[in-house]
Amino acid sequence: MKKIFFVTGATSGFGKSISEKLISEGHIVIGCGRRSERLNNMRQQLGSNFHPLAFDIQSKAAIKEAINSLPAELQRVDVLVNNAGLAKGLAKAHEADISDWEQMINTNINGLVYVTHQLLPSMVERNQGMVINIGSIAGNWPYPGGNVYGATKAFVRQFSLNLRADLAGSKVRVSNIEPGLCGDTEFSHVRFSGDESKVKAIYDKVDFITPEDIANVISWIASQPEHVNINSIEIMPVAQSFSALQVSRKTEN
Image 1: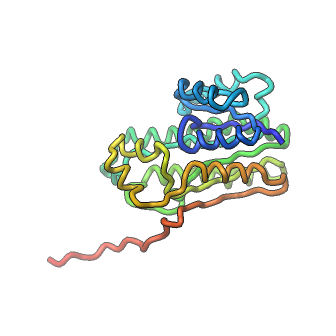
Image 2: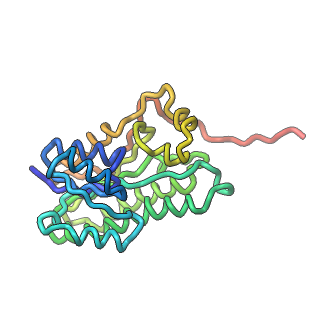
Image 3: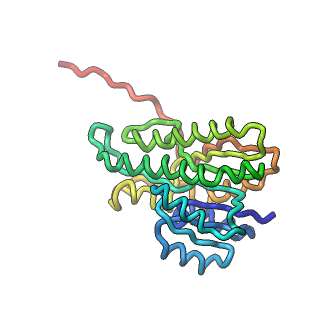
């Protein structure tokens, strides 16, 4: 059955692969992002079922204006994929740049909340729809330098669970996908401000998960029957696992 998907952060990485996968399955995708040129190129590549919608995810007013500008036939969004997000820096909290923290909060939390708040009422009114949030294992497993990024993804996890609680009794579903180490995206390029040596070190000799893997998961969740809700899925490459807790030992005087 053809559905209308609203995908944020569609111009690269997860969002681009998700859009391509859904279009290949015959769905309609409203692809969102700041970079209008990339969105228009995707329209040429993917065809008339891809509808570009350019706005700044950090601006509540821009989100509202963009969504209200959609033609009537695209107003009934079936599945919202809150994919837009980023990490900035890997500095310890006392050494971090506050502007990096603000950008992560404004994108990963505020933007996700703004879009959800704009589209959710229609789903509830129709008693049909789905919200799929892209979280991260960083919201579950702390690591040095993950401070605010991990906290934003912990918010996404808890927000997803609380949405489920609020929507109890309706047929609107909510899922949270929590990826681990994933390559072939702009994620680490953004985190390390384009420092290629740092980016390469993250992925060197690792069979990481790919944006196509995440797109397949999105497709699978969206294809489940109406009585099934996938609460959360945590995904890691086989090469990634857990490690011991840190222990700080006394130094000899």
